[in-house]
Amino acid sequence: MRKSILLAASVLAGLMVQPVAAKDINLRLTAKEVSLPIDNKGTMQMSWTYEGQVPGPVLRVTEGDKVTITLTNDAANKNSHSIDLHAARVDVVKDFESIKPGETKTFSFTVNYPGAFYYHCGSDPMYQHIARGMFGVILVEPKDAKALPKADREYVLVQSEIYANPDDQHSIMRGDWKHVAFNGMAFKYDPVHDPAATRMLVAKPGERVRVYFINAGPNEYSTLHPIAGIWDAVYPSGNPANKETGLQSFVVGPGDGATFDIISPVAGANVIVDHRMSHAHSGAMAVLMYSDDADPKMGRGDLILVP
Ligand SMILES: [Cu+2]
Image 1 (tube, rainbow, N blue to C red):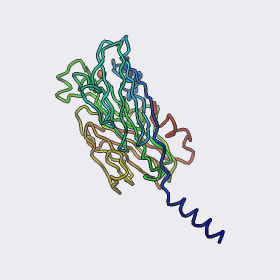
Image 2 (spheres, rainbow, N blue to C red; image 1 turned 180 degrees about the horizontal axis):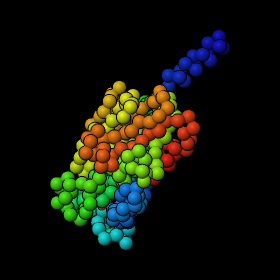
Image 3 (tube, rainbow, N blue to C red; image 1 turned 180 degrees about the vertical axis):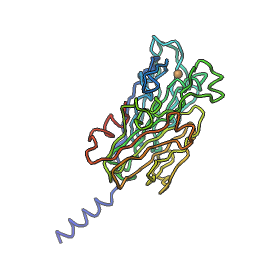
């Protein structure tokens, strides 16, 4: 009798949904105009950024959270800036408006859809602010922690085009880019195609590696393919409800994103590429190396975005 009651209680507990309590999340970002390298040789370009980095910080929240964004436009900047988050449903005029150097603004929204979402500056001309590097990723974790299989490592990759002279707005409108890059630099994680590269993404064979991929554009589509591998699952916009299985490539347009899972059964490497060859060979390639002694810090914590 007692045993059956305990059993019933444990079955009930197993059936009960255990919701994650929604939280109030306060996120502060400062727009900073700084010079940053655009390739492994150290070619510098004046960049417009969130927090002085391209891409900006990874914002990580959970479905149901109330997110409050406080954006400051650093007083040392020369341009107006703003933030447009694709995870937000808000008043476009009031909440996504531009602020001048020295100003701060705050707005809030509740994140109702899980996924990997783009955020970027929307100040005029938007294509120039994006081409200068003013973008990042907001990850909205599903409130059901089991909605996705557990990832052993996670990496954030943001594709964008780099223009030789982003002050020449016509070159951006024409799509006359110099590099197509992941995370702000041509061949940043690819010592195979660029001997000057010092970084790679790593994992162990058999690990589930999850890539949160955003195409910042401003103009070009991406056909994301893992050379010598297959995407185990692709989730358009990163929503667990959107699962596609066993894909060789998946197209992500500018302003869009997807979550890609991959598992390598063997040691070696996948080269994650935009399979449009003019993009790949201009910088949109990243080596994901598999070995049993892969650095345990990589693809975890802050190192989901490898600086
Ligand atoms: Cu801006």
